[in-house]
Image 1 (cartoon, rainbow, N blue to C red):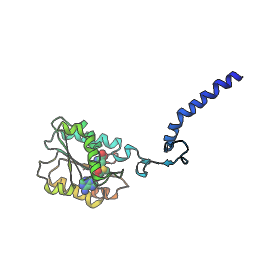
Image 2: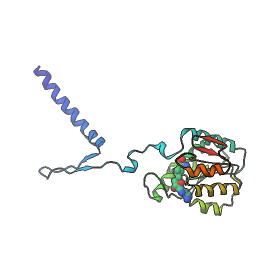
Image 3: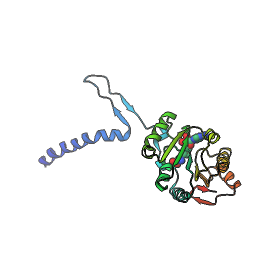
Image 4: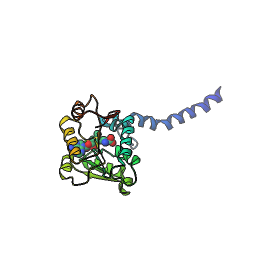
Amino acid sequence: MATQQISKTPLSKLRREVSRPFQQLARGVKRVARPKHAPAPVVVISPPPASIANFHPQDCTVEPEGVALLQELVRESKQFPGPIIEVGTLVGITATYMALAKSPEQKIITVDAFCWNPWGLSPDVHEALARQLLQYPIAKGEVQLIRGDKNEYYRNYKGPAPALVFLDAMHDYEETKKDIEWAKRVGAKIISGHDYCDKFPGVIKVVDEFGGPRRLGGTVWAL
Ligand SMILES: C[S@@+](CC[C@H](N)C(=O)[O-])C[C@H]1O[C@@H](n2cnc3c(N)ncnc32)[C@H](O)[C@@H]1O
């Protein structure tokens, strides 16, 4: 009995000591080291910022059914000569899905003003993150990332008729209408976008005014 107690106490103590920093980390508690006889330790409680606390990567991009349709549209667009233009890059998740489905000759242009992101990043940090995540297809010349306001991009567009446009920047009626009108004006062969759903009644209204979605996958629509 006595032997058991002697060997059990140091072991459980050791386990407690080893696991303490991890438990503190998990609780977001950081102890600041102090010299002997210094005042009571300062306990810093650092919960993650609210914008990131309940974040899941799926929340900031297209749902799997939508990705399936988007990639199908990209494959269909191979028959047309122009570029694929995405409006609303965020950090390049859908641009990457499109790059995976496109043919080697096709080029993706993705446009973003870096004016919104779900993490509260400054525009410059947001852009740097997007460029870092897209560095492989950018370096290979498969993707071109343009920083700028979409409406200015539309005004200055002098390129060929896009094979496909994917509209995923602003999801209100007026802005989505401008997006679709521009895509039609420049002769885009396939016009699609995100968020045809109750949360964005403006998207539903304007897509319906243009004849309704010819195809719908998740909330990705194609005219
Ligand atoms: C929903 S996110 C795009 C998500 C991305 N397509 C994906 O699923 O991976 C919308 C993006 O549109 C951009 N945006 C919003 N308004 C814009 C505008 N007027 N011009 C250009 N980009 C804009 C925001 O900065 C943001 O990065």
